[in-house]
Structure formats: C-alpha cells, structure tokens
Length: 171
Image (cartoon, rainbow, N blue to C red; front, side, top):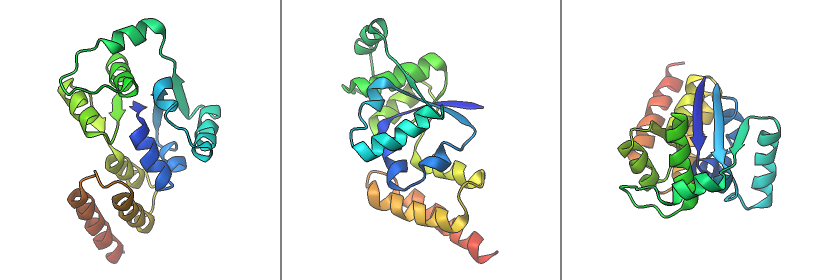
C-alpha cells in the first residue's frame, strides 16, 4: 500500500471536483499534518474531511514543538515560507512517502529533495486506473479541473481528455 502526505491544494481541488470519496477509496494511506488540516476553514468542507478522519481514511499528523523548530529552520532551495507546506516536505521526507500537491514551489522543492511528488491530474489517473471513475465521469472531472485550477497544465489535461474520448468512442 502506498503512503502519501497530501497538502491543502490537492484537497481543495478534489473537493471542488467532487471526487473525495473516490480519492479516499484508493489503496493508499493518506496523511496530512495538523498545520495543513487547519487550512480547511469552510464549515462544509471541514465537516466532510472530518468524516474521512473518523473513518481513519485520513490521518492527521500532529507536529510537536521539537519538529516545529526543525521545520522552521529547514533549508529549502525553493523558498516557501508557509509553515504548512514545510510540514508536508518534512513529513514526506521523514516517512519516505509520496507528496501530493498542486503547489508548484512545493512540487519543485520535493523534486529537489528526491521526494516522489504528484498532483491532482495524477490522482485522477489513479482513479481511472482503479475503476473508481468511469470514462465519461473522468472526462467531466478533468474538464472541471481545468476550470477550477488555472495553474494546472491545460495541455496535459487536454491530452488526457482526448485520449479518454477516443476510448469512449471505441467502446
């Protein structure tokens, strides 16, 4: 089973495209830190994430004071002042696991530190591969993802959509 640390950008994307239940249905242990979890402020979002915590599908890592001190003085190549993002890098490195993020600076830092890192597009690929999204819904989900996150590589998404449309036509 894969283990992953997810940051808020991935959670928000997956929430907005309505695939959180499918995401937590992947054969992965999903963690986040308390600093990241505390970025989920809207009550309806928070309520949904709390259900995944109660069912142990999302595990929250509490950062203690000693770790917080270590995190705050970490030397990062791609400066990122967010303590929440720093906790994600710190824990992904410590746990030797995948980092899930859509934040470009965080992604670059993870790559620099040889941490396996993926974003929302990769997650959708996983949902398709594991038959948690059918082709028609995957196309709609990818189209919606383009609308809600302008920072994602649109051309990469369009290639996937076109490929899925061809699969749909060949059925």
